[in-house]
Image (tube, rainbow, N blue to C red; front, side):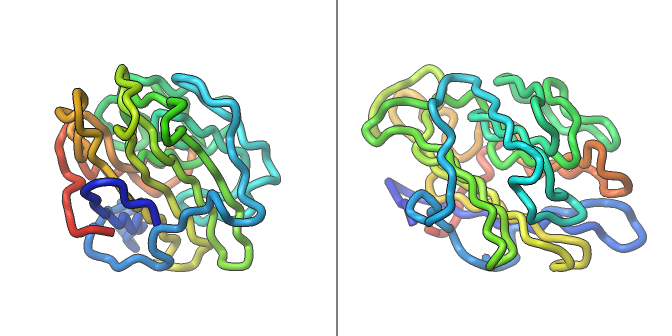
Length: 231
């Protein structure tokens, strides 16, 4: 586990509530695997080279683990802390609030589920330590993992001001129709970007996109909500 300065953890269990068609996000469910640093795990893929506002397509057939909220298939991963369940999605650096379903947040192309663990104007840097973005299709444990490691906030490239967080998508039928956890090892930029610490300038939540009868859920918007016990 990476723990650079003060750390915080939020566990988001995105659950389709039976009969209501609404996703709920809770920070009270314990972790299933804990923070999983996949940068040293065989089979994990590093996204390179990185650039500001990068959106990388993970082709169909690569991520075979999924659930009703975020099915297996093609993905678009943004360095700005968003994954959309579609290839070649547009994902802007300028985050917005999450609207009521079926609408999607302004600036994001709709896909089969949209995960926003830390949608903000982030900046990959050469470090030290250098920014790394990884993904892993772990069929043995039934989980797909996406990790942003040591990413700064725009426009600071200062060393040691990166944050680290990840998404774990578990194969259904956990948590009724699927469970997704957002885990945070470090959410404090510090330095000149301290005003953005703990999600103060971020959007955190989920949008159903083209997944039918799921719903949207906003955990926080422009609020320092990621303050908690060390991971």
